[in-house]
Length: 330
Image 1 (cartoon, rainbow, N blue to C red):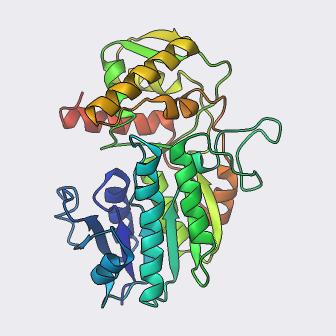
Image 2: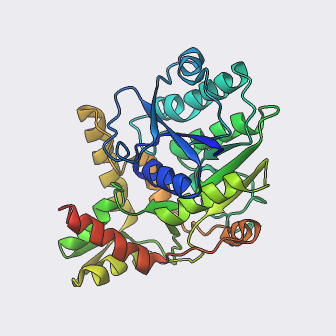
């Protein structure tokens, strides 16, 4: 009999890939989605759709009761928000409610997998090391990162909860809509990049990320955490360069001074508050954009899980460009 896996946030960008990867691993997938969520991306995958109201532990209990779960992959949350409170509600409080529900129902899980972020640990502190690892003291530089770190603390402090925490770097791939804006920009022949000296960036293609998640869930490793990237370090211009190659398009780079990026972040942040729409760049996110290095310890993940990334930036970008073009997004 197949093990049953609940995946929260199953209808989103990463969630959709998680569902497919879990199915490929032979798991019986239950897709946890919010009450009003669009499920077009997963409705034809032959899985059970479970509508969950995350507003309280009681409403989550109501949704989960009577169902046996072997694994829960908690992927639901937000990566951008108008303010700190919205991050807290979506990333911290709802994680707390889910854990309360698990305890109330006395679920005997084989593994609780929490999808966190490299942002929870923050960028490299060169006074300590050349890359971020579990040996570092977390130092998030954004409200998003701080909310993920708070949620991690909830997970790790829960007694009798076998957990694994996954901390991916910047995730891209078919269906992603934030880094997608870089693809759109390059399609117009230009690329604005921050003028940060010797900046190091890291990326992970979504398929590699979800394969790590499922491997970690099914592994014997518990009460531990893994950083996830494609194992390589890149420069500020690497992403737009690979996009331009994949599109066969020449681009003109505009190195933007940091003071101008600060001004832009203030303007877009103010616009977002007025329009009640979350901008891709605001004063908070700026701290991540201009950070010197996001190098992280993928080698330990590869060793522990016997995993080798299948997509470097060049290959992943080719697949992503192809998908955007096929879906009339470029």
